[in-house]
Length: 473
Image: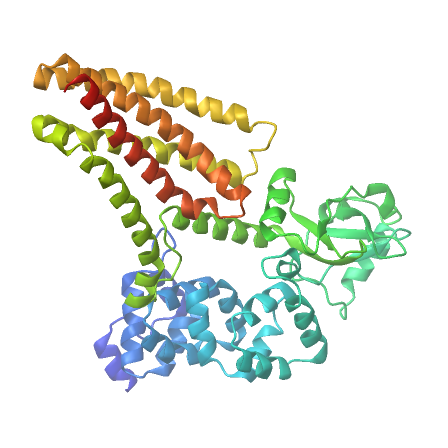
């Protein structure tokens, strides 16, 4: 397509990059639909130069967002035109599912060159997403030093501090001064991290004994010994789970922390940007797990989405059928008083909502390690009292509404007592279920919702219909 044709199709074509930057983003820094449409039009026309012009106007994070908006077919057209100097940064910003598609379109040699622009933690994160054959080809195209570092990181367990850490650190011996450290960092041949906050002071065995913040270093005189201005460090063991590492960062308000091996030697560091990503990932997993689904990604097919949700729907069906057997046992009572059939779902619904409230609080407390053997009884007792107080209030309200509707004080008493019983059961189940599941090594966020719903439905129907059989019949 000629430039004149492009101008005729799109009056914005040919504008300088700074104007394209203004068009690309909305006020909230999200990509504008107009800009995405311009990319799609250029891809449809096979206009590679136009694609390069559009991509040049974007920050790597915005290119990553663009990849998420495009279908796989359009990604295939756009990926070859990503500026080579931005490819590495784009890869680190991509969603995991989208990144896998992008990596399939990048030649191993080009990918190897891009990875060399990244710190070791980002290199490992990307290499993990490659299939075995592609991984071998990319590693073979990398320098031996980088290849060995990545293979060492991959040897650590998944979701451990070893996988999360970057191997590049700034370390200094105890006898160094501020001047020594500054001169060391200014050497052009030193392989320093792209971003770092602390200099770790190590002893003869390369064990960290303290840390000097870069800000403190710059404020100190050159002849000041690092040992005089260093602060204690919070070490993270290389095999520690990444969630536990994130909790350490949160508890002690860390910006970075040294990672040590089994012998206490410094092997890397974790920085807060990695921890933010872990917290976001774990939070998303817990939210999805509470709904009984997994993160199948925005590009997942219908069968993939179905497989992630179907098993828990089957489990929920089983619990619902069990609850229905409770109803069938009181079929005669329901036939005698139709109002029971009308009010019965109300008891189960209120109990289900109360159980969800208690469950959300319990799962959060477990995730943040706020619950321990020292305070578990106090927390359970608190939730029971809350359920009791809410039960009394809702019982009075619902009982009054029932009396105004049916003018039957016995029916009002039945539904009031049933609601009170079910809300107490909901508080107990919502608190204890996740704690019991975690104790048995199960994910409380995944299994608890179904079990809590089963409990509130069963207790709700049984208490309501059982009391009705005793009091009304």
